Image 1 (spheres, rainbow, N blue to C red):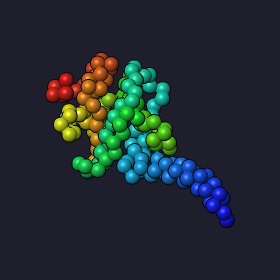
Image 2: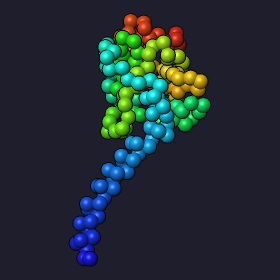
Image 3: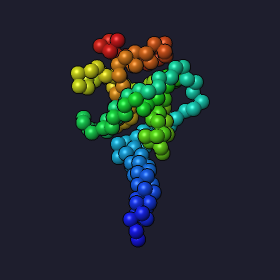
Image 4: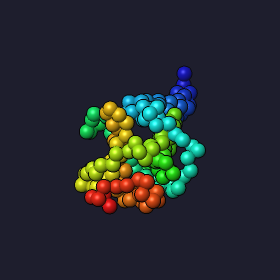
Length: 158
């Protein structure tokens, strides 16, 4: 096999290898960090009418029972304030096999969090060990305004 053939094989195999690794990571990470469990607990309700959409958002998903293990999604999350809850979806580019989740307003416990000095809004969902989805406090205030009080924040986040 000549040098030209080896170069050609490497040129073809490299992008294929990258895509396979990307897809594997996109399949594995949601399972490892608990997103697939959230999909089971809180399946999407596409029939629920969207009030307002917040694209390009950041989200930090903390595993139940852990204060540090989690997944950070920066700028690749879409939040949709709906009549009866919050729809959360991650761009297919980053989690190609994942589905949106729908968090009913009554199932969300809102807590104040501090992440590297910034105030965040923690959305605790699920029992007995809740997941915590942290969003930027400013966006949480906009969701509260959009929903007319169906989603309410503690005073220290207002």
